[in-house]
Length: 224
Image (cartoon, rainbow, N blue to C red; front, top):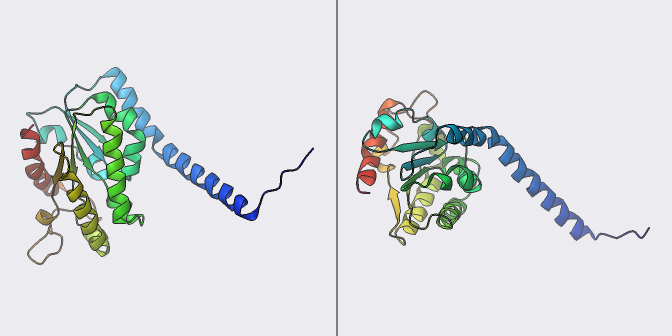
């Protein structure tokens, strides 16, 4: 049998490719249970078409009063805690586009920054999400809730500001995109995160925090 030689450069390229494939598979497997649960729920209780679909990380998943906070609107919660924007891109064809929402409201990006992704990468991932959705739902509006400031990750605030700025600039280029800027409203007069709107972990919000978000998000829903 003829043996095929592999150069050192080719060997390391192949190794990197396998590593990336494994990482992608691991990320998919991590969320498979939650994504499958959404799909199972949709089969037994189909979500309404033309609703407002909220997607993103734990701040969306933990928004337990979402329906009560927007009683005039039909809302769908597609939050899965710990996720990054790329995860929403990966699963959009399973838990987003089949719902045919009127508008998608995304809160994600903070976990990305915490995982050392650059603001440029975060903005690029949001653009990828928009492209993925637009490929199926060209008329659906997409609103992005700015990455919030919080005490637990205050050391990352400059990268958060930069990512928010880049995504805001991108949304200005498209009439079907919206940017919901919660960031400045979550700061006190000292320029630091407001006290009393976070739970003990300094990362997630309490009822007062969600009440603030409700006030800021509502006009974007009512305008549709």
